[in-house]
Amino acid sequence: MNRLQNQEHVLEFQIQFLMMEQNVKLLAMESIYGDNILILDNQSGLKCFQAHINIEVPKGVCITANFGSDKRDDISSDFSYSFQVEYLPPIILTCLLPKSYPSNSAPYFTISVQWMGSSRISELCLKLDEIWLQNAGHEVIYEWVEWLHSCTLSHFGFDAEILLGPYGLRQDNKDMRAISSSVSLDIDIPSLKSYNEEQKHHNFCRNMQQCRICFSEFPGSDFIKLACEHFFCEKCLKTFSEIHITEGTVMKLECPEAKCEGMIPPGLLKRLLGEEEFEKWESLMLVKTLESMSDVVYCPRCETACIQDETDHAQCSNCYYSFCTLCWDRRHLGTTCTSPEMKLVLLQKRQASTLMKGEQRRREQDMINQILSVKEINRFAKQCPRCKMAISRTEGCNKMVCENCGQYFCYVCNEEISGYEHFRDSKCKLFPTEEIQRWEDRMNNGLQVVGQIQEQLITGNAHPCPNCRQQNVKVGNNNHILCWACQNHYCYLCNKTVRRSTQHYGPKGCKQHTQG
Image (spheres, rainbow, N blue to C red):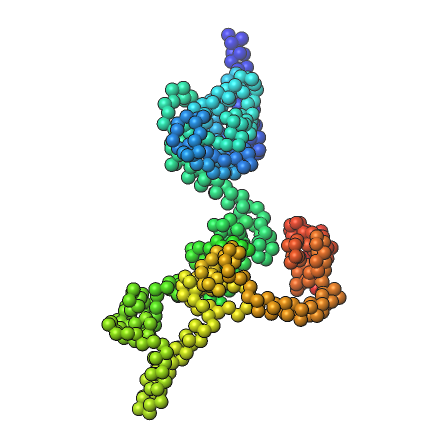
């Protein structure tokens, strides 16, 4: 009897020791993996936890979805869709630890993967069983987690490409411990792309970033990333937007990055601007949009925008005035429209009449001035082939860009163009002969001025770039210089290249702002 009691006492003591050891291991796992380990309560006194295991994704790996086949090895480019990812949804490992673990019993577990089919998850379950058999009687939780983290993709041969599916197949040999949330490509693809973008944004926000406008470094949470993937600090983007709205150049509210034409969305502008500025942006955009439409004219009475028809007539929706869009008089169906020249002569003769009242005289004088202005514009300007805005070339090449609608066109033949190929394959010359001569004269006359400026740079406040030796001038009190020639960042004080301003400037480094 005493011997039996002693055995029970020994067993109880061993179980208490094993459970204390389990507590220590779980605490160690929490310290290693942090919030990715969740300890769950269990009423029976058993230890239970859930591990969210982030998969190690090789650089440049892409996910491929095959739409016309359920066979794993049948890859057809006609029915496949591929996209790259940097992050994959985690593997969720849920474990229940028996009282006799790890000496006698293996942990009970389930594996859940959002994007993987049951057959592949079942293979992972078998692999964890294999690891336990190789280490029976020893701690295996850490080995399980690390293997799932680093070896899952390579186990399936997914080092360069991850194949989704197969879908719709009968799972006869499914392991009951395998839990799959994968249903169809229509659900898996958006889910994978959404998770990847969320994780990229999360990592971007928690790291330091450098603004491409002011070159200062702030946490990523202080930045705004546009759809084109370029990002700028919120303060600079706000100032950039306010300047364009103040100057009325709302069509140039694009990504500040050089050669990028990505637009700043209205929702972002509403967040950056005040209520009054945003209303001004809306009204300016409406005006610019109407001006870019070739069939929009303005009522000569109340200046409301109107749509002209195929017969060059329009009716105002505000005052209901029906007018001719060529001569701006009342609509005159069946009669010839008075030419601007004839109308100018008639109005000038009527101005000489002593019987005309003051208000009528003023209105007709305004019409005379408008006709003369149009004649002068037609002499020296050309119309944009898209929006018909009059544009005059004062100097430079014959490749023109309309400030109203942004269309490129040739000033010689007035055709819409996209690049400089037009001037290689046609009779139109990029630069007029007189423009080339004027440029040469200007350059020759300016040599003396350039020499004087260079002398001032050498004897004044200039400092050579350590990369290309180009002279650069310190701006204000800021010792951080951006070379205008090679775009290299360097310090004015020590003349060394600056990789990260937060590492170079500070108590143990150079001062970023000094006098002189």
